[in-house]
Length: 293
Image (cartoon, rainbow, N blue to C red):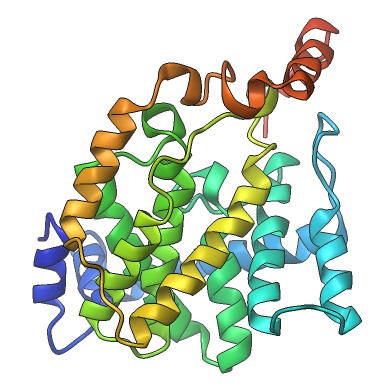
């Protein structure tokens, strides 16, 4: 068992972080069952991406259709950046738009941050032409990172701001991408730390209290950040602040963020003129949140 990134990396010497997490999960069932369960999670992620790119709209009408626009832009040949980057942010948008439209997603680590991990990994899989088996092991790597963050800090926006949700998802994706590309466990840890550092202080300020704006687009930013951190780690760049100290900083910053900026829709973007208008429209006009997903 591991309780820190330092312990996790030490245990992964000679193997991968994903393998260490897989062995841990297999203790509760079997290796075959753990792999099958993670493959199912991957299947859900891929289905959500495809559905989102077809075009979905949320019940509130606040979000939807942007993944479809990004997909068309990707195919136009006029992009500033490369295909892997564009696919990553497109897939992240698609997944989180499906979440906003009450579709089926895989929380990773939360529903509000569900687009970051599939955005990065599925785009990387297409670029590298690697197998589902490799991606599944990368998902176990992501799970190990998420477990350590959850046990030592927080992963919910209500507890610690969006840094805890999209920030953790981005850190998980950065480590997973690094493992998928053949990076060492230490490189994965550095990617995690750099991704998380880049998102420290990010507040949770959803318009009208719905996980839509700015959440959907922040998933795209989280995927882009994960790619950035992974590329740096693979190049040999290291986090100056030790891995577990970065997670400790996440916890302390999360505790310092005012309640108005922790998913209460009382501050930040939620308290703009537009944010207040959406709140009046949705909650004062008789609109009701769906009772079931």
